[in-house]
Amino acid sequence: MIISDKKFENYTYVMAIINLTPDSFFSGSRKDEYTVLKAVERAVKDGAAVIDIGAQSTRPGYTEVSADEEISRFEKPLRLIKDNFEIPVSVDTYFSKSAEAALCLGADMINDVWGLAHDSDMAKIIAKHSASVCIMHNAKEVLSGDIWQPITGFLKAQTELALSSGIAKDKICLDGGIGFAKTKEQNWELLNGYHRLSALGYPLLLGTSRKSMFGGDVNDRLAPTVESTRLAARNKILFVRVHDIKENAQAIKECYEQNN
Image (tube, rainbow, N blue to C red; front, side, top):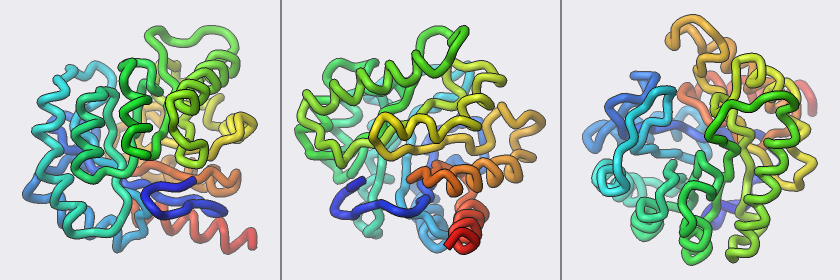
């Protein structure tokens, strides 16, 4: 996969979560314009290959904010990151207005938790800027019965939309959407069979970091998150999107050293 002018392949790379919200479920990830540069510097030092900034919480029960509020939250931090680091930057949004603003400010990728389905202009905005995209599975209702057909069907349809809108195939990755429109049991089924999504023909991103599927308090979920990262590395998943960069990067390194 290509993000900006960088090609990502043959490894499992860490995408670092930088939240620009006051209500993200893991308080340790919350940053603002005054702390973002130190956070990115630390992430890069610890092994991040991509920075993913989000200005809207998508935790269970979140209160949606407008595109204008998103833009006001990420505008200055995004400028600061792009002015001070060479690392590719993804922006987590499902609003085309926010995506347009972010891409004009130099963002390299849009991470859409609604997989281009929430905003009819999203795909063409990404294509207009020759940007990369992560298309995630989501649904308005919790899945029932077999989970694989609705997930793969959605992702296939949305990749076809992306291609027909002009987004290059080598700038697309897919996310099965762990924690979104799925029960705890379904999240585990998806995680344990995540490699099956590779049959769609695109690189994958896995997002499990400190999610409720692991149970207990959010502050105690690092160990199971790292274990899911090891699973991703063993299955050649291209990206893991995580809060704890150093620990996950180390787990990936160890897995690849053991298998090569």
